[in-house]
Image 1: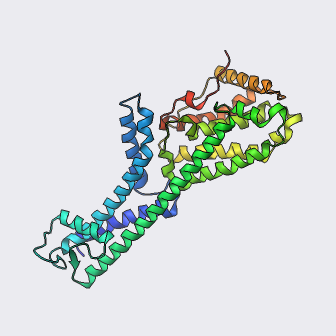
Image 2 (image 1 turned 180 degrees about the vertical axis):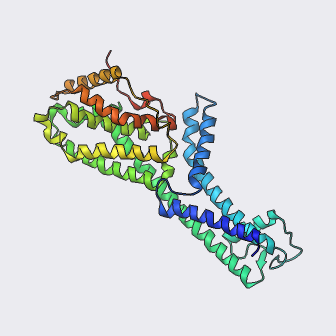
Length: 356
């Protein structure tokens, strides 16, 4: 095996290891090549979207599917190049066509390599030694295995995407389509009756935990951005974090202590933060020093508006504006770092309309 063939074997191993980490090992932050490639494609699409502010959301909505296609092409091309570097020195000797002379250029090697990765025998080119026969067999096994693994991976990605969207839609419907955590809280306790709220929030916790783990197992999900803000992970997380903060800082603890201290509320808060932290740590979010947090005056107006919603719904309150502002200060910067990366405005994430 000469230097060119060693290089080809190294390229194939590199891409196979990358596929192993992304598809089989399946952890956010792993992968040798794919994460950088995905970020490059996202940067290209994001840059193109900046050329048309009117159609920016539409252009960004194509990023996820384009990254999927680009990643498959990237892996296929990498494996083909590696196999071609191994095959090229053998052209015309141990690998020959059924008739005529055999070109020995790299394009022919790419053709033979691509064919051998998908069809035993490499099309019209045939191996004529034991070593090249084993090479073609290995190529066909690698090609078939990678194809089946990637297809299975894509099925899981789109299944997880559907579940994420279903959760986001559920949260939006529970706010009455307003995207306001206070409206969601008012609907969870009509006339101050929160008896069923812990179980309803418990159902959300299970779905949210699945969504958090889906982003950990299938990092591609991060790049699926929809035109409708209601499907945004940032908006969904903001609503749930706002909801749990309002429960802990606004409800009368004597009357609603069972809800305030329930495991469902604490789990919903923690899981929402875990989801945002996973995205912030493993993807190209805004600069870590980026705040994107409402001013104290804006938070006070927002809290006052939330109180009005709850009081209109007949819910007993025990307001603690300072504690609400402190809690919001812990999680809002996370939303602020994840939000701009996917091209959403803050008014699409924080939908409460503060009173003047």
